[in-house]
Length: 213
Image 1 (spheres, helix red, strand yellow):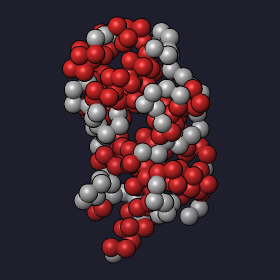
Image 2 (cartoon, helix red, strand yellow):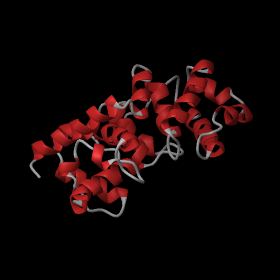
Image 3 (tube, rainbow, N blue to C red):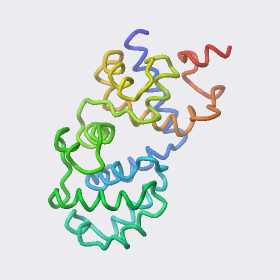
């Protein structure tokens, strides 16, 4: 595939996700000028629908504007705020531990510092770097892994392999936006089960769709 085609396909995915009001873009709009809350959103978002995560973040926003405040909230109260979030009790511990290492409403924009924080691995760190810090990196979550393989952009069994292959395949100017575009598209069109292939604006470039026709 020509490199310009990757850009075209990615922008079509983004346009469709925005048109369908994908939850990831709803959250991004609400948190646009709130990097500290956006960081908390990303930390909490694993194994959780974005709508649920955003509700929890809005509750935190009403109570706190700093990591110091997070530290002071009792664990039971924080667990109640995060109820509905996947592994919410574990994430209470993560938030508290992160709060003990950061100041005011700090958002680290250094990969090594990010992955040194509790509960933050490569995927979350890269999403933070791309989405909040504006760095040219690719955050590979389940949506990016699934859609990249379906399209035929990669042939990878693990997200780490998908990330490596995407860096080689696609233009650098796409790296920063790719996660949100694919997450939004995966939430609305290229679903994990029963993808809406007949409604898909990029099906003519999709390896899996071509197998069906």
